Image (cartoon, rainbow, N blue to C red):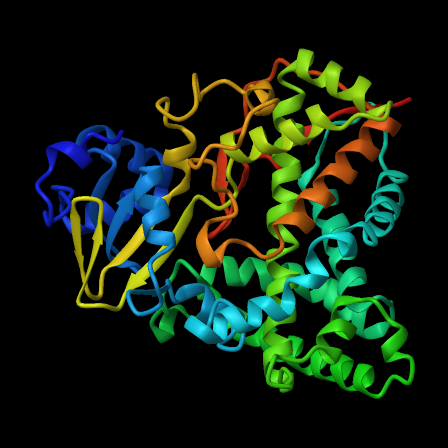
Amino acid sequence: MTTELTETPAGSAPPKVALPTWAQGAGFLTARRGALHACRARYGSVFELALPVFGSAVFIADPTMAKQLFTSGAKTINVQPNLGRVLGSGSMFGIEGAEHRRRRKLLTPPLHGKRIRTYEEIVEDEVRREIATWRTGERFASLDPMMRITLNVILRAVFGADGSDFDTLRELMPKLVAAGSRAATIPELPRPLRLVDPNVRLREHRVRYDRTIRRIIGDSRADPSLTDRDDILALMLQSTYDDGSVMTDDEIADELLTLLAAGHETTATTLAWAFERLQRHPAVLRDLTDEARGDGGELRHAVILETQRSRPVIDLAGRHVVADDLEIGPWHIPRGHNAIVAISLLHDDSDQFREPERFDPSRFIGTTLSAAWIPFGGGTRRCIGAAFATMEMDVTLRTVLREFDLRPTTARAEGLHSRGVASAPRFGGRITVDRR
């Protein structure tokens, strides 16, 4: 929907949802995507909600205006602060402007280009290790094994080794990610609710994480073979900014947490959604299986893109207005408001994707990606690990389908289960497989 660009006078305030604040918050917290779809149907592609945690939030479901928001400078917008609070002030989610650009430039090489291909063997090894335990003919949730695969992959890619500290992180990270995902959407609760406050659990897990990661960083700095290592931590320790300075241990700890957390849950959940979708579309599954057992990869790549379109794990990308005002299209958004791109609304827009309710990977074959496809966000804040995640999903799907036949099912599609920031299949993407 883009009619606002021609029908709304410049400088207008976005329409506000005409419901009590408590009702807006309740709808957003309990049925976020349904509530946002209802708002778009009534108010158009830009509207304002009053929400807990987020405050006054303007939601944007127009690709042109989304791009305009993403490319606004740091003097106009900052990243929405909740993820920075969870992942640390020294992570890329906690820094702004020139410092963010400098850090991004430093961290990009290990996660792109030829370096990515060096991690493919790690991914395939971890997939084969996990699927060796799968029992045929029994239905199980695919999310759990996908979580184990992606966590082991990122641990090996980041640190390049195993040991007691890595076992600690392997046990700790799922708890830390679960608490952090909830804490990003829930403010500090009153003291009597301490036992159910995810912010409290997050702080407890962060203490263990910091203690473990400092030991790993110290050991790596003292490693006489550091210059021979190609893991991400070793590259971080040896990298320098243009002025010759290096990252501090605090900054490295926060960035490693970002890589471990963001590179773990979202990729695993997208894979679980892919399995959930494929078994309900037998023709696509048959063609994909045939391709996996050959040398092709075009359909597999399209399946990944369509899964991310139809079931985006992260459905919001927020910025905080720090200038006196922000002009987006014809709309005026004042200082202190949050401007949030509603990714799921863009992905479900029939003006952008024909018959968006259909799972149709062919829409991504032989075409250029639409500006409305933004599962990794956009602008200078686009996910730095997008290429790594895509490679990991590609290798995982290929390896699983070479070893197993995924049984089609006529069961109803799994609904959404909110894990806080991320949305997973309600039953974990349950599948049944047969070994070839």
